[in-house]
Length: 99
Image 1 (cartoon, rainbow, N blue to C red):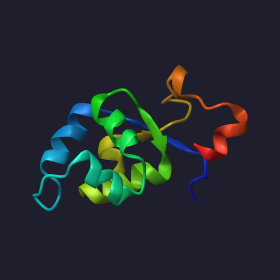
Image 2: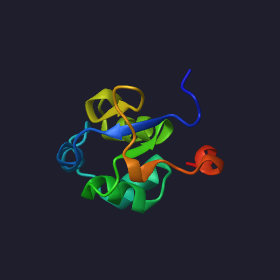
Image 3: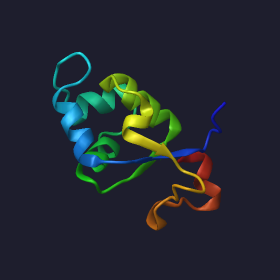
Image 4: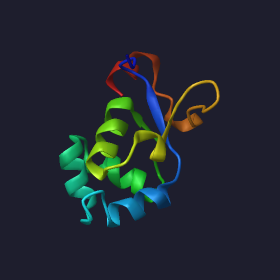
């Protein structure tokens, strides 16, 4: 079971962009359509796409990969001892459950 507040770090924004141009179904998917399918904010996907954001929740990472049609470990690595959270993306203690 994955803890609710676990995070995943995007390994390669360029790979995400390439996979969005041709998903597992062979179709292109836009940032907006991917965000709608995943159930997250368009800005979250846009920031991952541009490289402005590196980490998302485990639920978002899994849903994004499901929609694109790849295994989660193709695009993301679980954050932990060997994959630290980028300094600017550590949520304040009281907000961690909301991230």
